[in-house]
Image 1 (cartoon, rainbow, N blue to C red):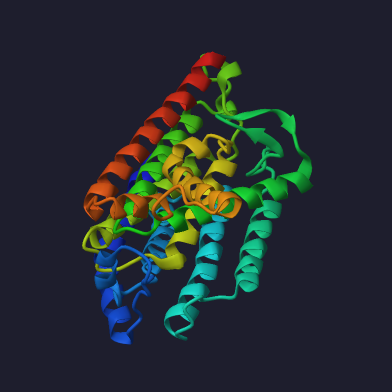
Image 2: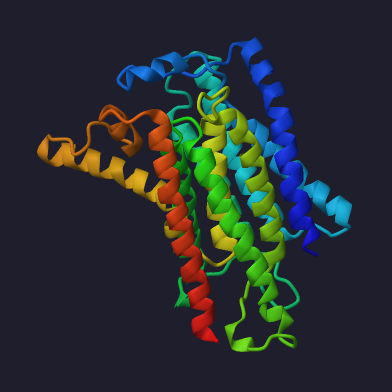
Length: 357
């Protein structure tokens, strides 16, 4: 059973290691280069023209790795796994249209705000509604209308509020990854860590699933998750694909993920959290994304209320660049912060399970 996780991770890694340079050549030949803000750190101006839309590489690699692992092991796909992949692909498509208009049509703002939001709403609502369907033999659907931290707790919010909550999570994480994707390898490396955490969570939930009630030492501490092992397969494929992409995306980046990649990764993170019943835990597991998003909220709020800026520039990573930190120093230190968030998040996940024993 666990072979699926290994296969999906290795295939995802191999595909992006080999496939990304081919995509770089294709995009470079077409002249699809990155637009760089004039008000940012001067060092970034050298990046103008670097191929973007690299998210195509790890989106395709993840989907192929998932289904190939199913073919190799002879295991069928699950609704939870396919829904998370669909959410990732749908958000990636919205990001791709934004990048395409920005780069190819030479319109620097990309998709108009209303069109971009409409696309995200269609994808997000479709995922939320479908995730409450497809009950298994035990009545479990991919998502639940209860709020969750390390697993569901008492409050049932109903299907309408659940759709609103799921949409908020999807948009917040997509925006968070998008804001973090400002330095070479920063968002990719941080995402690898969170997908690694979700691989572990999926395996643990599978081993301690309520579906295995007869073999558990303490059935009261079990997890009510529809397809925990398959969520681990998806997370492993994403981790491997992002790891391979990081080889080409780390400083100095040969390719950027663009909105294609950042919206897809944010959607995948939100989907994994919703389907694994760890919604509020995602705020800690993806702590770096939350921190960087909050820096923008604080900067905008402070400027509107007082006319003063808290940071030299938002998002937060550019503040430290303007203070004189090198790009690589910022990235590595932010990775350390993200690693600590994952360690604490997994510690709380385990503690929550152990407390119920």
